[in-house]
Length: 301
Image (cartoon, rainbow, N blue to C red; front, side):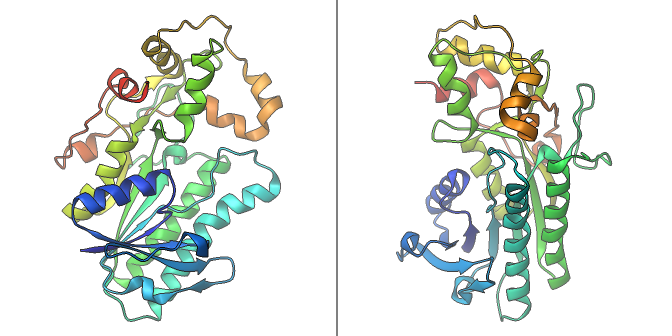
């Protein structure tokens, strides 16, 4: 099998490439940087420029599955211009893939795309499953809904669609975890707000395995890509501190302070989404890291 990956050089993409190669799956990938293009037997890069509509159609040669990960990080101050970049990086890239396939002879039969649990509203009580009708009305909710709608357009080409709504990705190689863990390691860790907000998380190793499980089992539809046991922000902070043999001594960080510092982006730290992973568990997928202490223990030196 051969897959095409967008965002292959990012945190999640690199791990998926590694899992693909372990399974003897060849990888094509798209990059906006010509300096990042390599050509090896099982790993070959192709240039694209979504903002100008440019793409090397050779990237689709013999490809059966597209794994679509690309998207500008949301962990950066949300200026008006950057909000447009967050949205465009997801919609433009998806549309370019779709429009190119419409006019290209190809073998693509399945697209497996990243999405996000930010589609679910902020709630302390609700337990969100994939068929939840409630949607977040803020900026992230808008982004995810437009993103998913764009990906679902692949069905018009008789290409099967899978969407993975990803939670907080835990990795020692990047993403949120080092930023959370660093102040704790220095004795400066603190809980955000009252610490009761739910954090639905997944270990990077399991997320990559989950993408490939969807590909290899040919599963379609929407799946919550989170571990089975969500935790509160206070629990997450405490577990990391315990693993580091540190204590949380600073007072909780008030919401208004982070709003002053981060602007609208502060909602990433305070929004609460308790998300259910039963749907993927019922397909037979097994998490390597299904509880937070086990996952953090793997990441802390």
